[in-house]
Length: 329
Image (cartoon, rainbow, N blue to C red):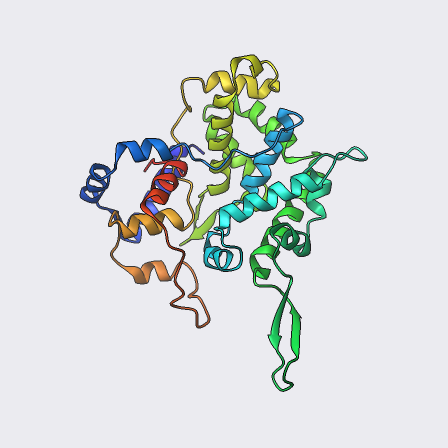
């Protein structure tokens, strides 16, 4: 499957749901951009870390795990309320803590399959510094506080732990020590394909945590948000490698860097969850003409938290988000 096919597939589904793009609002948004502010913020892609990796393999594995866990934007209000940071910042903190607390021992390396299969909700909560219990006043006895299992971020941390253990199981089943080893095989195979980036994304999507395809009216729609995020991250990392270090790259990545020297083989679709569509809707770029069609795609949310305010974003946040998520319709 090519990325063109992914675009056409998504466009067809969007058209059936009467979702449209207002070209006039796109022009208005572009005319309103401040060039100096855009240039200053467009490269803040969130992939620079205060780490000195033992090898490029370790760095590749780190970015792959980060991509695998790059989710939870739907929980941004909870993350902001508990930690003061957004979902992606919290994921970065988790992966950074996991990397620093897993050491080379008994043939294991940081963030390898062994490390991923031992991830628990408690270890993730510890990485973020959040409680694993919720404390509430006793309903009848004054001055008594009752602690119940399940902290304020129990649900997203459970999902994150499940992603880690499922990924570890996939790697074990297919004979890989870590995600980087699997990625290197994918890159080597992709170089023999007509659609390099699409092949890489499709092979990453074999891992359950990367597979975000959905069925709409009997049609399987591939989104590949995490997989495309990783492809874009890998492209940026390889383009940042200085000439003196290029020779140290693993052979598949060296060949891929040479192939990407003049840009990706085909532009990537926007790899998004609900953040960018929300911004585009606010800007009037995305038009939803028949909301009842969209409501049939997913069950309505339950509970009473219908009017919970989200975090406050500034205009500078839109610059960073739109640039990082890929501005390709």
